[in-house]
Length: 535
Image 1 (tube, rainbow, N blue to C red):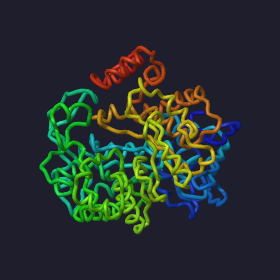
Image 2 (image 1 turned 135 degrees about the horizontal axis):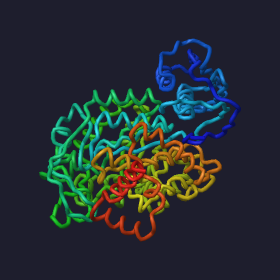
Image 3 (image 1 turned 180 degrees about the vertical axis):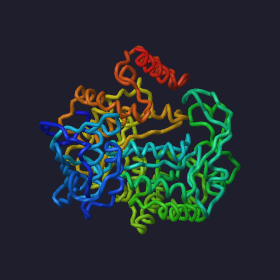
Image 4 (image 1 turned 90 degrees about the vertical axis):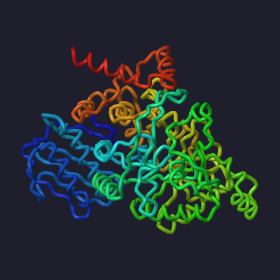
């Protein structure tokens, strides 16, 4: 079997489906929203037009099937799918596509019976286009591959210190100034090296509408992240009155590490003022435009790594703290996040924040917490005990921008909620899992794909089905799946890089990644690919 993710139940039958004899397809009205996408998937294998009527390939409505689940029966002369939702029917079509190797030259579909459904409703990928910007076509290709893997949430990180990538009509300077930086930090966190080439890019609201619609047709929800109160320097460069102290500053071109200290940069990592009326009005204006633009019932506020030092001396912040009886600035941030939660709730959206939003100990329990930090956060356990929900993106398992020398492929595959400290009694509060593709050190699609695949396949598997996990068996299915990746010209990491490095080589490569040649693993991967072509 070549299926990734592995279905919950797979029963092989005798014989093969005669694909060339399948001339018609039918989708029940109750599950027909994605009918055109289903047809386009089927046509990959059939290579011709299909007539829409009952007969050979039938997608039947069955309300007893789980929300995104499906039942698939393949016989020699017919394919029958049962589903309760249009997206369940779509995932069945993707299964037919992979099982039958429709993307390859000679499709062949073995007879079988499959009963399938996802373990988690949230099966996501964070996509950072702030540090490096990839554009519409690269984003659409990523969405295509997400749908193929039955991943259903693109968490789109659109603003950060190093770039504001979304048009806001009320505040044009956010893209006129905030989407551009004069240079780019290169060669790792501890490096002082700089590429002096100016860098820019952003999406218009029309671009974003196009991509949202494209994703919807693939069964994918796009959730925007507008990072605030920290990671806000690009916005402050455009509108300096947003900060506690007004001072001229540029869009940061460094990603952290030693550069701000060595160069004496005083405005690194400055947050928005969380107390000035003008800043709060700005936030509400952004919320209005972004919430109107994105139909998803979620809004990601970020809320991580906020530098709170300026709030300690800001007259407006200190006044608010005194009025509300706050003893520390973490409570000030918590109050700010709760205010955003109330605002987006009026727009029928639920707020999401990274687990640092829990610092003030008074977070609205409706906020969905995304748990990412490497070290254990006891406040996440408290949030769960209080009935709160979480998305799990723990660094050790799901930070795909890290080198394979640090996190091998098996790290992702071996994820369980228990492994990140979630007590069994709170498993039902785990809304799902999400991989993270941060792009500080990923300037192009070629390197992006190298870091993502085959971690992508492991993510898809643990998000969909953690029953009876067997890493050796997964690797065998991965080998059978790779011809599809080859067909789509995906630059995946070879086994020798993502699985088999010795300890000495891993240590050397990690050292280079933090301060030196960040393409070292990629170069080795290229050599391995070339040697396999030469054989």
